[in-house]
Structures are given as structure tokens and as C-alpha cells.
Length: 596
Ligand code: SER
Image 1: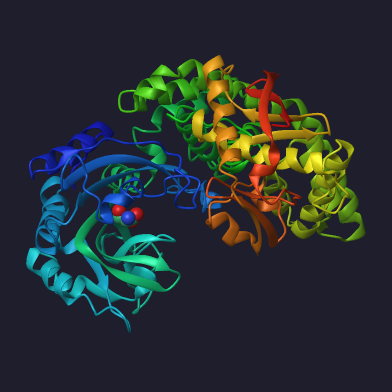
Image 2: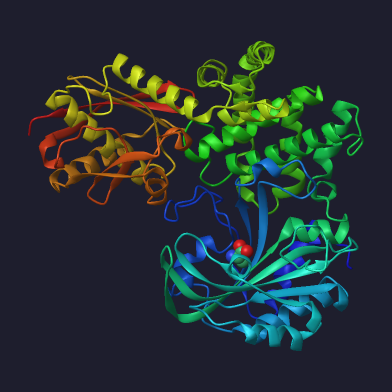
């Protein structure tokens, strides 16, 4: 097995493919473009969806790269030696060019010649087939022909050997594994088992289908190959017996944490767990803040995930008994020593990253201690009564007054064998929203008797939100809104004062949509479906299961209680009166509607 530094691994991957006619297309933003219903890029193929569906790629039919991805679905597993929230995927693609023969041959060459893994340590899985798609015997034969031992090739069902997202290109896949020294867990142990005997190295997907409905597929005109191998995983496995935090990607961060805490990594379970969480979460936060889209912590969508990551890291610093001052050092390490060379945007925005990180840490630290006291007091009281469930009013108070993301309260609770009543939390959250809306003179989810002028302003708010996204930055979200019969006020995240031209363009676009007299429609949907459909939504987790979604033509779709006008033509003329700062990173627009 070949020892390699992270830099050597990057070069080895790209060189291998360049020699085989591929073009390195580089990495793109980590943040999803809103078309796939997920907040982040979760796989290297995601930015290539249109090309896998048949559109011609300007750089040809053979592509490769190393793409940053973020997956937070198993954030709770972070803390062990292998799970991470940011990771890089080494990818290569054939867009209607070569297919299974070349792919299997090259995978074997990579495994045995580049990574120098012995043949008898390699295993592969292939798709076992089902009612609609036949067993992938071609790939099994080719894997064997390339060099895999027949007894190490397994046919597995769709749950294991089919790759797809909600929609888009998909198909049977064939994964490759390394057989470790860990004993198999039993006679039926196979690569789908997570006992540790098999460690996944990479995945070759043969994309011949498009998923067009939940279980509806159509055949693609061209057959593609989508290859994705986990960068961190391979690095760990080649160099550090599988521990990603011991690789050169993390070693500087772990060293800073060891020095600050006076504890050695792996000296004890709890401190190792906290060190890994801090290292992982700060790394992901740096990558998101320094992304070309410059995500900032907020209470909405992807920004809320970023907030949770930073706040969770702060909490683990307290557990380790170290000052969060070192987060800055860790961030600088990731930017200067590890990623800056490959992610130029990090270097250009270093100051921004450090200052946003700091701001969020300080915001949370202000209330963390008193929040923890409140939490401890409560848990004590409940314990005395023999209760182990934290009620909604308390978890909401921790959220609202002390800035504890619900997930943090849940984590603290579970450490003590407590649970949190999430439904009750959601209920409190909703009540609070309704109350603050009515105090601010806004609408109570459509129930209040609302004047026609206010209704118009409400629809104009959705138009303004959509126009800001289109003209200024697709990552803009509503941070607050206030309406009365005289004017509307709209707060949104934005890192700069809008220029006169930008204001004019936004205003013009809203007026164009008003002129187009777009229809405003309302539908009730399951929350999940609403989110999948790309509807704008604050606090994803906090909505009830059934939500109402308002769409304006094709330009806006938001979860909202209403009420709204039925066509945009009713609004008159939209005029921006003022654009100013509301708080740090948040701008405020005051606008009016006038009769035409
Ligand atoms: N799309 C596949 C995966 O994410 C291979 O790139 O595993």
C-alpha cells in the first residue's frame, strides 16, 4: 500500500486521468444551486447534472476533478475516526464516451498500480438486478477480467448498488472495497456490512437512466460513467489505518487542540471526541464562509447549518476546557497550510472568514454560560420529579433567549439520558412566530382580517425577495419583514450596500413582473415535498408537516401563510425609498407601492 501525502494524492488522481484524455474542470461552489432540492453539493456529479443528462460540456466528454462536498445527514456520527461533514470527492466522468470496459480496467490500475493495494485485499460489488433493470453481469465479468478475485465479487440489491438523487441521472453502480485485518462478523459478512472487515474506496456509477418520478425512470440517450472516490477516506486508509484526523489534512488542527488542552489526541475518549468535532466543524465552516457564494451564519437554510456547526464547536471547546480564541488559529491553519493552494477563494476572503467566524462565536458565547446554567437547573428539577423529557417551552427558551439550536439541546439532553419534545418545541416556535407577526402588525398566517393594501405589500415582499436573489445574489434570504398600510420593510442578508444601479435593477425587475400580471397560486403540500420542490423557507425543521406554498408565476415559491393578491398586476408601481444597514451583514429596504 502506497503512503501518500494529500498533495500527492491530488496530483496522482488528476495525472492519472489527464494521461487518459480527461480535462480537469476544477471544483465549484459547495452550496447547491437550488435546482436539486438539497442545500449543499453532496456529490461530485451534482454540478454536472445537465451534462450527464445530455447537454454538451464545453470541455469535452472526458472530465475529472476534485470537488468539495458537504453532507450533514450523519453529522451525529462526527466524532468517530472517519466521519466528516466537509469532504472532497475525486471524480471522473465519461459523457457518452467510454463505458464499462475502460472504467473497470482503469479502476483496477488505480487500485493496484497507483495505490499499490494487493489483489487479494480487493473486493467489489455489482448490481443484482430487479424487475425493471437486469443484473449487471457485464460489470462482474469485467471486474474479474481486470484482476479482482471471483470470490471477492458480490451481487447486491438496489439499496446497495444503485446511485441516484431525488431526480436526475442515475444507474447501477459498482463499488470497490479494501479487505482489512478486522475479522468478518459472520458467514454472511459482505461489503454492505459495516463491521469494519470491508472499507469502501470508491464508486463507479453507470448512468444510463434518468429518475423522473419517485419510482419512474427513463433511458438516457447516452451512457455515462460517473466515478467518485472519497479523498479523505483513501488518504486515511493509505496512511493512518483509517483515522482521517491523523492525516496531514488535520494534523495541524489536532496539534493546536492538543497544545491548548494539554491532552493528547486519543488519550481519552471524551476529549478525542471533542477534538474531532471542533476540527471537523471549523474546517467545514471555513470552507462554507470562504465559498464563492460566501455563506454566513443565519437562521435560514444553509446558513442555519453553518450556525449549528460553529455553535456546536464552541460548546465542545467548553467541554475541552479551552478558549475559543484558538478557533482562529485552526481556521488560519486550514486556509494557509491545507486548502488555500487549491481553493483560491479562501485566500482572497481570509479576513472575511475569520471575522464572520469570530462574530458568530462571540454572539453565542455571550449567552452560552447562562444558557448552560438554565439547562442544568432544569435537568436537575426534572430529575427530581423522575421526568426525562424536556418540554417545548424550555427548549424554545433555550433557543430564543440563549441561541441554542434545537439540535444542541437535543445533544445535551441525550448525553444525560434525556429526550426533547420536538413537537412541542415546533408548536412553541409557531406560536412565537404568529405572536411576533401580529405585534409587528403583520399577518397571522392569513387568519387576520387584512386590508387590501397590506395584502399587496405582502405579495410585493415575495417579488422583492425573488428579485434580490436574481440580481444581487441567489443566496439572499429574508431575515425579517414588516408591513403596514403605508409601506413595506424587508431585511435580507447581504455583505454590501446596494449600488444605485443594483437598486434600480431590482426595482425594474419587480415592476416588470408586475407588468407581466403573473398569477399567484396557493397549494397545500407536505413540508418535505415543499422543500424538495425548491420552495423558499425559513427554519425548515420548524414548520408543521402540512404547509401552504405560494407561487408567483415561475419566479417565486415560498412557504407562507398569506394572504396574497391573485395577480401581480394589482400591485401598481413598486418604488424603493431607502436601502440601509439593519445590523451587521443584514441590509434593509423600505419600499412603497403607488397607483399607476
Ligand atoms: N455519484 C457517486 C457517489 O456519490 C459517484 O460519484 O458515490
